Length: 117
Image (cartoon, rainbow, N blue to C red; front, side, top):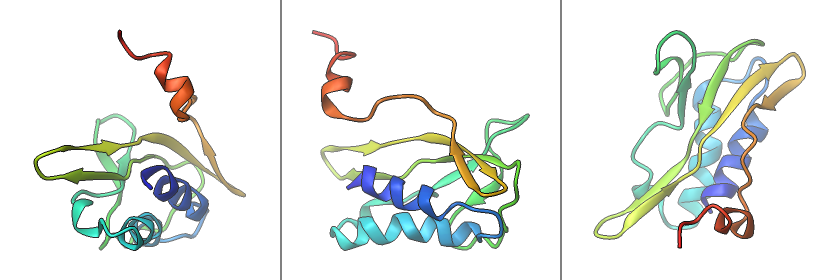
């Protein structure tokens, strides 16, 4: 579900898109799965000279995305008393859409190779 939310958000990234709409694309997937209340943080933030800077991808963000912007797309779900899952990729807005800059596998088989015994 978190991966599907991330994919939906990344698919919404393009020049002229409003940051809140990208955030909403991820939230819709998580809410449809019944976990809307468990996604309690913003979807992402800009990457630059500071660790957290604009643009901010949050429900109220009115920032229009422009080519050259680089930010995280990191939906997550946290269940009280259990823990959570968050997936983060870095994304560059291009003239035609976006490019995912992160090169980390997300399938369980590939991730198992990194697990400690």
